[in-house]
Length: 259
Image (cartoon, rainbow, N blue to C red; front, side):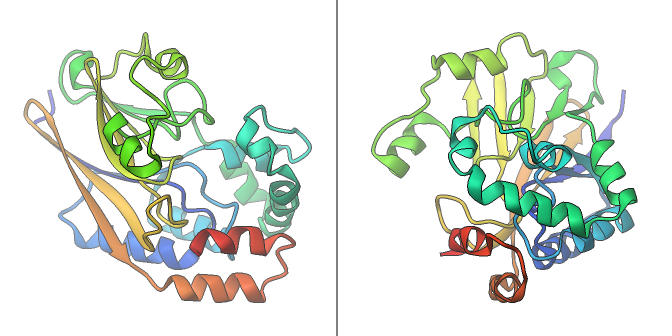
């Protein structure tokens, strides 16, 4: 049994080199991390996807693939997810643009990324920490914050605890602590015996429109996981300017997320 372990997790970098540099600098100022994980959506949507991959590799970051990695693997494959399918005329040209800017080695690295990473410092599933992009079953179905937070955000709960989609992606999963991104909002939610921790977005602001690079620290202390969410300021205006001066064909679609 491991007595101490520290894991830093961030997600949804979306090709933003300024956010990438800020979050990696902040993590390296923390007490030493045993593992740093970038939980998917690493390249598509920002001004310099190649620089982001180089920074991740130089820092020894372990990656996961998200839905936008799948879009990069095969831009001609229209996604099953209705929300992204409706925006495919904006996303597909960006996927081709990113592919043109990545080296063969960088594309090979993206293709090698796993779906999940698990850490079991103690005995039994109750001690297992599972990191994925969106949920433990796929890279598309979002896990929303607790129903009361949904009510505050939208005036209604869009995903109650008995939601069929939520049950489908969580039932039968042994891990008790599940860590993810995808829905760009820092939150924690209890569902039955599971703690669901969303680390937020490292780049594109979410429904709270906060321009910060988010990450979360997970500390194993002899018998349990403790976690602390962090947010780091970075100059989002630099990324907006870089996108505006780029030849990304659908750049305005991504710039509007910063609005």
